[in-house]
Amino acid sequence: MSGWIERARRGVGILDHPSKPRYPTYRHTCDYGVHTANPFGVRGFTKDRTMDGKMENPAGGTLRFRYGVAIHEGSDPKTYWKEFAAAQ
Image 1 (cartoon, rainbow, N blue to C red):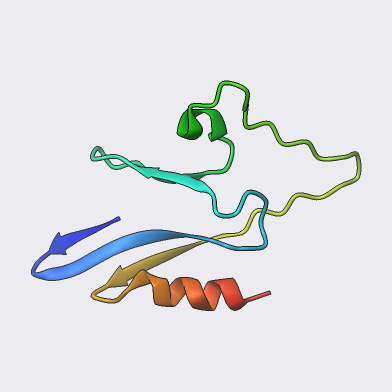
Image 2 (cartoon, rainbow, N blue to C red; image 1 turned 120 degrees about the vertical axis):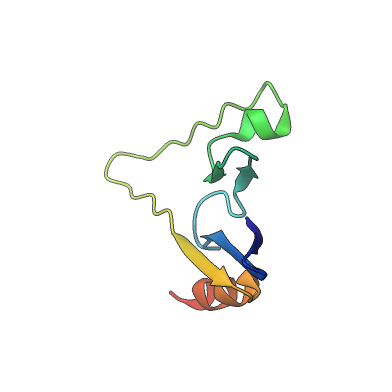
């Protein structure tokens, strides 16, 4: 999400790591300020009534969701994502 503030392009981006479940995740931005990544909103984003967004984790298992936040001014947030995605 970005816009012009005091003649400079500024914004915030949610970075989605390729190692996490359901990469790339669904995301949405609304004009009233919501900017989110939502890996569980499968039904809402696909309109597929057979999908419920449920994700099962076996007993003792681990789910790791990796996100980053890039606050940028005048730069392309994709450069931050490339660095974030390369990190293990």
